[in-house]
Image (cartoon, rainbow, N blue to C red; front, side):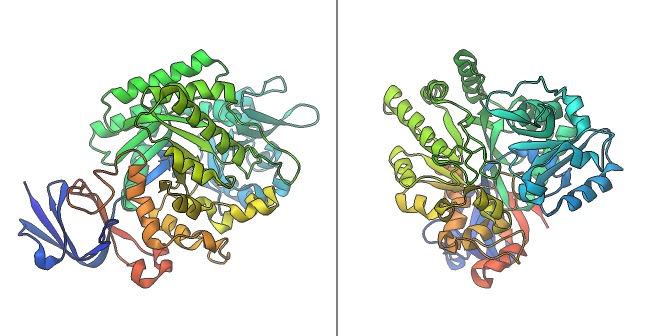
Length: 529
């Protein structure tokens, strides 16, 4: 056993007491946390130069393989006009090898919020172009991509999705919800090689380690991700603590849906390298930005959206997963969707009786009053993403609702006050994966993307101490790991990050300039700047 003393530091423990000035690690576990004067003798000493130490962050909702792929694509989030988007595509065409992929564009950067294939064709028309929206719930493609996908006026809309069409019925270049998944993403998966996926895993793992992230919860997991993470573990390139939720698609057939649950249960019971399957993921609705989230009241334009999973298809799946001991993660952005999610969980309680369970609802961007209290009663985790509330991307969200609902957007303190577990995450690549920037938005409701944009709803900010706890200990607890990791405390896993600037002293703005200079997982330094 090797005993290491980390000294000359400001240690934020995410526990009581909140602060210490040193920690001692025995191999992979904290053996002492407190005052240096009381620390036991150690085999080696690491002087941290007075820097801040925090528990390793867990990104409680992310998409690892997709994030790694996105890091190699054309970034469009800060392109604020169609001309800027077109300029970046034109510039990227020279480096594209047979297909061009971009990500992160915003609806309000496109005239009328209505992208068309012709807009891309104007600058790139000779190869397929696929552009994932910032929310990753829709994909904008050019005419060459429509042809490559085989989409014609006769192609039917899939369950829960829509191929946008003109007055004559021809596809215009927008694929919403499951249409994006079953056409654009299926094409991506079929045309990406294992070597490219391995490179994507290496990119995202390296990026997360440099950001002080030591654990992640992958949502919408599938065989390709399982195989890629297993290969990374086999070559010693995957130190992150990864849990995953197997994606279950609504096929419209109960037997086929339940077969997906059974597959997830088999994987959860198996030993897999590089990742642990803990449950299933169901997407109940879309997003407010695209007016595809299911709302109790219509959008400002009078439209609304149905849930992707109707009640009669959803309840059997949730009950079966609950009976199998799987954690159920339900994507619900609109208040109609979150109400349906809780109905399904209540049904599982009534069918399966009392048993250990910790289900979760993802996003909760607008939830009806009383939702937080209902979640607390049912023991349901609120899994929320501060970076989705960044004011720089909020205007279109607010415009789509256009009424008093805007005043209760991303109401994190409601879940704290109700006593529900609140876990913070980023949902990368729909938003930046950087943990410190995530904490900045959480603690300020100001923009980490554009400092010129004023804060929105600062009354919903949470103190930095609580924000960090939601992003570390609570995020680990969201997948049942809170007893053994997420805090800097005796007996906990020695997962932590060292930050070169202390925002608790220097102020919240330091979160946007600070760097993680050391990341440690299980007592081993896995990143050092």
